[in-house]
Length: 265
Image (cartoon, rainbow, N blue to C red; front, side):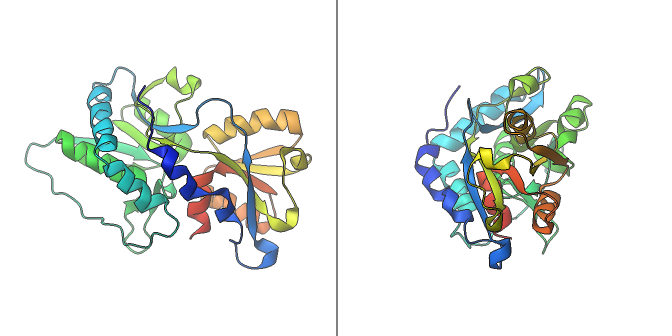
């Protein structure tokens, strides 16, 4: 598997410390600490088993990396200081052009989210999908749904592929095929500063929110057995953030880049 070598230089952009100081008043200020993770935590494109799209998507994805355009997308979406407007220009479908349907869960900024001003789904994954499909001569249609519905939608033929910051776990590989990893990330525990959490041991007896169907759900279940906390599972990241701010949960286990995306809103 071709590794995302360019991520090594980008990781400094998304420092964990960026989360400190976010969240409004002191009582709701959000802080975080990193969760040690065994194995590779990264995102890949998912396809139905045996899909003929895997090889051409991989080739185009690698071209995107090698050309330097992926670096530009990373800086565009993951640089916290970036304020430039996103180019959301749509390409017109030519007569006879095949349309590919992409499944995503648009609650995962900066990977994918809904632009409140236009109602359009935008993000890092969206730009990758547009680049690949345009290079391969396809038109792109995007379908938004809950994260835990993505693989069933693909298995039933409702979507042709999934781009949603999805990690290729061994369990998922039993049902779908994956592209090469295109982005590597880190898991965080996010909480209010007033909760005084700084280690996994501090979570004993508390409630930790995760997104249903995510890699974080699986990890939270394993950690809960060891550290004695309750796992609260919800469909959408914004719901989980609201639960944290309302005090109905004590912390969230989530990806660093996604945490920063919600902090910036």
